[in-house]
Amino acid sequence: MRKLIYLLFIIFVGFVSFKTIEPLFVIPKGWQKPTYDFTKNKLTQEKINIGRALFYDNILSKDSTTSCASCHLSYTAFAHTDHALSHGINNRIGTRNAPALFNLAWSKKLMWDGAINHLDAQALAPIHNKDEMDETITHVVEKLNASILYKKLFYAAYNDSMITGEKTLKCIAQFLVTIQSYHSKYDSVMNHQSTFTNQEKKGYHLFQKNCASCHAEPLFTNNELVTNGLIVDETLNDMGRMKITQNVNDSLVFKIPSLRNIEFTYPYMHDGRFKKLSEVITHYTSTVQPYKNLPNQLKKAIVLTSNEKVDLIAFLLTLTDRHFLYNRAYQFPKNILTTTKDKQ
Amino acid sequence: MRFFFVFFFCILSTPLFAQQKNKLVFHHLFTNKPLVFNENYILKNKDTVSIQTFKYYISSIQFLKNKKVVWKEKKSVHLIDEENSPSKIIDLDNMPDGIEFDEISFNIGIDSATNYAGVQGGDLDPTKGMYWTWQNGYINFKIEGKSTFCKTRNNAFQFHIGGYENGLATLQKISLKINNKKPLEINLDVEKLIEQINLSTQNEIMQPCKEAVEIANKLSLLFSIQ
Image 1 (cartoon, helix red, strand yellow):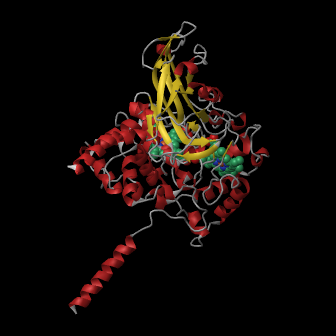
Image 2 (cartoon, rainbow over the protein chains, first blue to last red):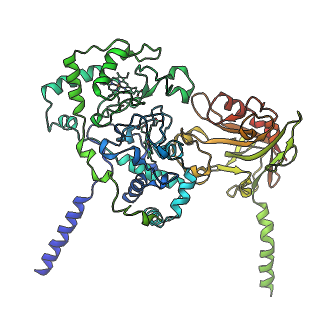
Image 3 (cartoon, rainbow over the protein chains, first blue to last red):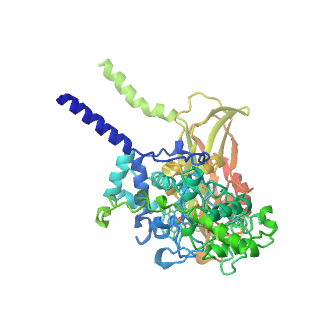
């Protein structure tokens, strides 16, 4: 009898612990294959933890004041709500709006101008940017190698406590790819677990007709770069992708952002010029500039009545994913970065 | 006793055998003399130049005989840095002895496949200072210095040559005729590059661009076999 209880207990424990193992990365039903090559950077919980700790750690900035999370806040979909242009070290102001971060495993090019072609290399940009963290990866790696906390974490993850630039960046990328959003009302409607209101449904149709060619479902971006006909802001003169390719056809070309969680990622566009969704929609109906490289979909003005505009916005609000916004796995890792003393 | 004799013979002769190993040695020169950082060199046009940084990637090393590849190095990427002497000697450990060749070829820089593959370790680790940060891509070739010709801050010039896409590719293939000499010694005369650049009008390249491609196209002039 005792043996039987013992056995049942083991089975029970086994079952409980089995159930709590969640996959580290999910391809939601019906989504295409991610572009990120996981075989080159195999996800483990230990490495994701390091990436998460680094994301929240000021150690990545020159004067230990700024972390990735200073500009990318989890409860606003990792965008910097209310800040049109990013705010970095010593209150320096950058030239672009910090974008939301999620579903990055599907992105092809990163940054508003697509300057970065691989997620593993992305973190180098903010670390080295004078207006952001003003550090160097070489010095960051020195600081990490001098930290007992990180030595321990890297040893647990790699069986080797030697910290390199490659490992550091790949751990950050591991955390970034695990930031996923696929639990919005829109998703539950698609999975037949919920239904749109009439207004949302009308908005959905308007969206499919006018916007979905670029903001393609289910990611709400096709991850391409185009111009959407914004007037140049002459105080910034940001020519977008042209700076990278030096090709006039790329003048004012920017990355098409996802519209998931758009309710929280204001202000909008690469320079944060619009505060409200209604202003964005008015741009698409009234102020699109007839640039030579304007995509065909925008060449003919989009016509929307004021009711239709409201319907469209009602639909866009179904893209809010509270499960994602309040997901603890994305927040400050209290269990790892307890006090600054640990870091020494 | 005889055993000891054999033993000593072995020990004494190891350096002899080791010498047989294939090595590729890079010598950095300025006007035919070993390059010395911060030394003021006087150019033919009377301007002075000094060098503070000189580093570049060598990749895809292969040996040929009658235009046919007889051996190529696997995972062949090496960062050669004037500041780090051991980096100027490449051990071709896996190259079998007795291979006959009459030509060596390698790339200066990193191929586009590697540039698309994200971050890598070893000589490719971004902590080596040969990776652009605000955009992707390895810097294939870096030279920095000062010249009275440059009307810039501290008379400085900086050329960071790289780029692999958008029609701005800078990877250069170098082929040199050689004989079976060991070790193989390759000279790079920095002056040959400097005299091709008009430092009064051109003193900074820090991103992929047409000018970078033009300089990359001149890099083969630097190389010769000793």
